[in-house]
Length: 413
Ligand code: SF4
Image (cartoon, rainbow, N blue to C red; front, top):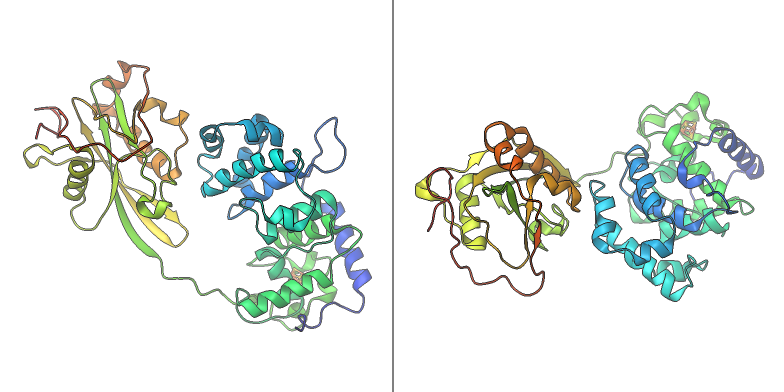
């Protein structure tokens, strides 16, 4: 397999020296680059947590989460001992919650099988939950100076421009060749700094739009710049057409200001609410209130009173990869909230204490926004109790639940 022309350059040593000198002078002070007080060398745990958080997520968004997470779980032992709900709570809002679940599982494996030390062998690292080739190479090179090159979107863009590689970089053959190039130009004495230098260059100088070529330490070697192709490399990726969907969710409130949450693994592809506590919700197409009422009847045994509509609250937009989702929250007073497996009753103002997804936060924000006439009085007299119901087994019999007459929108069936 050929590497991407004209790399590696004949003056590879000079090329490496230039980029490394630039990185050492310009590297951003990011918390995962620090060694904690009292320790020496780079901490694989800190690098690993950062790499997982940074998947699909911008650095600015990760920073506050990272600090909080490391504050609560400063080492792999503390993470391994934690309850999953506590890990998810600290991840709450960062999205892609399978990352947090895998991180937690991997921490347990590292403690039980690797004596609490992130493995130094590539195959062993790769065998951990949630670790792919990129993450394994990044952690091992940065923490242990293992000579493994990384190739992520930023590095691929830099290499493609340096070599004037046209076409979709996501193409399998093209990606493989870039991977080979990345390994060929790796600075073997300092693979950790080298990988970070290439990533840093892609993130701060050789950006997707309007790269700052005048400040680039390796512009001398850049074929895209020489050929006037900077703006057309990389070629725009063909994105799948966005899927539009509407999700209606019910914020039920009882007389004590409490609401009902459900756990619905697999609902909405398991993506939207990430298998965490959520308001009862269903995908709708035409008449959201009617379809939601039917969903509540089928899953919770609740009937809508005499066709009176659920009260629509402010809608919110939510994006998950290629899905454009409109969240349609509805409010309803109920006399009593049902108690069923996989449900939980909790005061509305205590939601923030649970691990919930961004979508659930947005729905809750609609309730807070509408607080004026309906929510505040009951929240003021709310009880402190949060009742957890069994997670196990099937949902119970769809028995009809007693519900409010008159003032609420739900009534006894
Ligand atoms: S010269 Fe411009 S396009 Fe080329 S690597 Fe540097 S920043 Fe990127």
